[in-house]
Amino acid sequence: MSMFSTGILVLTSPLHVLPLRIAPVLSSAAERVERTLYVHLHPGLNLGSGTQPRPVFIPPVVDLSTLISRLYSNAADVCGHLDVRVLLTNVRNQSASCSGTTIPNCPFPTPQSLSHSPEVVLTDFPLQDAGQSHQVTQCLQRYTGHCYVCSPSLRSVLLYPQLRKLQEEEEGVKEPEEKAEPMETYSDVVVGGTFDRLHGAHKTLLNISCLLANRRFLIGVCDQAMLKRKVLKELVQPYSLRVERLHEFLQDIRPSLQVEIVPLDDPYGVSVVDPLLECIVVSEETRKGGEAVNKKRIENGLPALVLHEIQLLKDAHHTDAEEEKISSSSLRSRLLGTLLTPPKDTSHLPPLPHVIGLTGGSGSGKSSIAKRLEALGAVRIDCDKLGHEVYQPGTAAYHRVLEEFGSDLLNEDKTINRRALGKKVFGNQERLKALTNIVWPEIALLVKERINQAREEGMQVCVVDAAVLLEAGWTDMVHEIWVTIIPEEEAVLRITERDGVNTEDALRRLQSQWPNSKQVEHANVVLSTLWEPEVTQKQVLKAWDLLQKRIQQRLEQQ
Image (cartoon, rainbow, N blue to C red; front, side, top):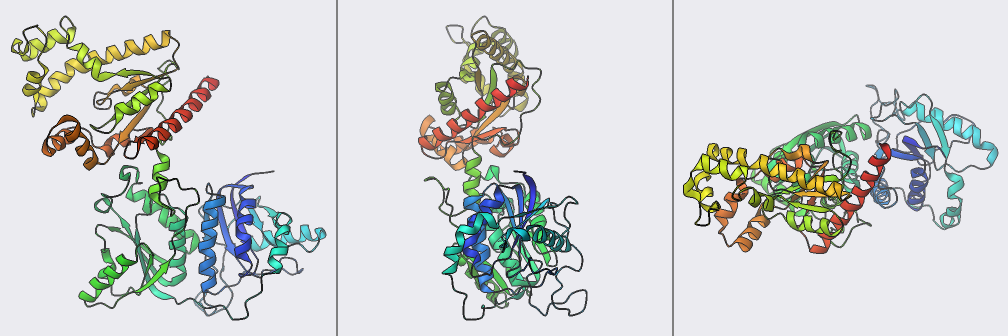
């Protein structure tokens, strides 16, 4: 069975039947398409009549809105790896203008270009007999080519043979007697959100907003000030990337709509000052935010917006530690332990042992993760302990520290009083750099010795547990960089409880280190000890298992 990167699914079943078909149709489509699946809706399209059908406008009705929610929900359940996009170019009131004149049924004056060119077109159209197959596939290809710019070698697949078992269920579904209820539409519609890693719930919100908007769609996207309380905010995609993904998605699904995307620095943004807005789209969860927007608008002398509420999508795959709804927070938590960015070139290092550089801020749980990895079979190299070793009498660093900072640092037993040394460098960047220039290279030499020792013992994995891994520039000694993160407020609590210092001292310590966001920029793998120990253990096991696969692949390639 051939696989295609991008496909387009043409759904022809009547609207009242489609809800039963969506999940099996998507499952079948996912057996052929592996990256992007566009969905084109044309209920009642007849591909077997012998005459070439043309695309027509379909009206925005309430049932269509419900169907789109169902489609994205089912897609999250049965083909979560696919980027599914429901196209709305042909969804419009019949009297819509086309090429400057009112011409009914002409949604595609020219074929629409999509972000990813479809290589295969699939359909749920039912064959009356097998002899129709060639005629229907030819008709389907011509129809799709009239609507969208496709690959020159476009293939077609009829999914109906795999859907026949649904016929009995569908026979019991009666066609509604009443005419479909039209959707109320508005000139200008607004939504707000983070839109991190576009998922089914985002797409539902965006699609339904595009159905509601006739002229302009305004989107407020959370910028830095609005991310402070987000779970795993360090893993939120950059603002520019989130905006780029939104533009691409919206250009695909409704290119005729005027789209404006603006940064959101407070909960209201431009929604409380834009006089042209008529409707705000909210969920059950954000309805109170919509009501707060209307309160501000009234205070500003502007009319209240219509609140159009959509349902949250349930996440069938959520764990006990995750939200029940489909959410970006859950998606970010699932990234923990996975390879976020490929490791840099490490051809200068021996393939074994595979060296992990593990780092993280004070209180982040870095050492507890190092111990968990040690229990799984890694050799742990504790750089804090090595730091103590380099100060021992008789070492090169010992003599250089005394030369640089004076012999008044010595205890009675001739060891260096590190508390007194700390006072000499505290708050003085120049003196601190003089100290680290002496100590860090000596620690690095000891780390290399331990790695060589592990190699001689035939060990496969070493973990270099180092708070200053990045600051010290030790990344050339490791194959991968793993970073542990927790929110600053949690780190402060842990430091004050563990070390008996006050909040101000804990904050000062954290602020003297690289922030989480800067460390994550260098990370191949990110972990977090924010939750219960069992959750941390699951992350570590996932990271370990994926690491073993990477090591095996690397050895096979070599």
